[in-house]
Length: 361
Ligand code: IPM
Ligand code: MG
Image (cartoon, rainbow, N blue to C red; front, side, top):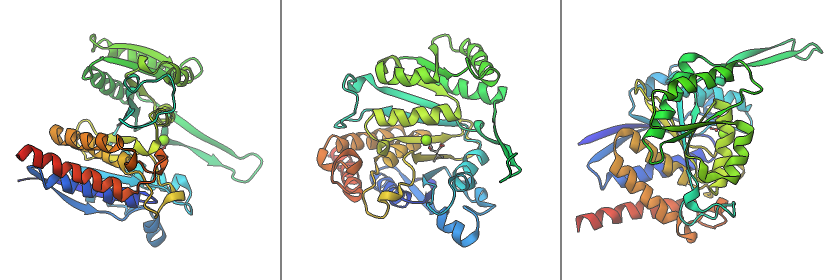
């Protein structure tokens, strides 16, 4: 029987609740499928930092390298500076495995009360492609003369032709595979006159390789207004690391809750495992209370299954998710409900098993 080896990294905060919930869903799925999962859990994150002085072991990537995929929770700890938790764990994996495409689908799921009054569910069906290896998050920069009046600091945006070409190609390909074949390239080349001008220019070049994809350009500030006022004019969206970070939070909020939003950090060339995670972060205010919405993790699992080539299984999980969101009694607190993480998880697992029984009957 086909067995996929999955690394689970709950990390911090509610990551420790939603990743085990995700594992439960994968196990329920496997019990009614022709494949199995083998899990290895890695207790990296804030607690590991307190015990070992680092967020993950220096050779940690070696342990992940042979896995088929990684299911990640979140990195962040109230007692450790955010840039240390982020760079010491999540970005170390993203950059170490060159997961250069960060993919963030957004839709208004059934039963979700999204905040825009003039936006029907069918008007908002986007995939944001975030450049995930360079740009504003390249880590280039420095800080000198700390504490002195002449203190100076820089964060340098690095854009390389190779990096821009590959993310734009990925986005055009993704757009090409969607029914509307439509891509919006987000830019800020009016103000940032070097890297973003190169970005625009490369977009024009790459576009010629995909003549069947309709594409346009939008400045990032105007993009926020377009997402709110004309959501139906958008389909696939590609943006730099920071621009897409900001736009994807807006997208998730417009679709009803950050707690629902999934993401995949993908190595399209499959040299390394890709990593899937909810985008909500560690949410310390609700950690340990069973209140976290696990749907962002479950939707990330859908992406994980698609990446493994298990399209039918992915569809089954998505169907179960949509049945659950359609039921207000299964809404967690972020959606205005009172359901607990465990209620939602048990419901999804139950539906997966029921689907299989129906099919067998
Ligand atoms: C995200 C998050 C992270 C990011 C944070 C936690 C640093 O907001 O995945 O969007 O900015 O990349
Ligand atoms: Mg973000």
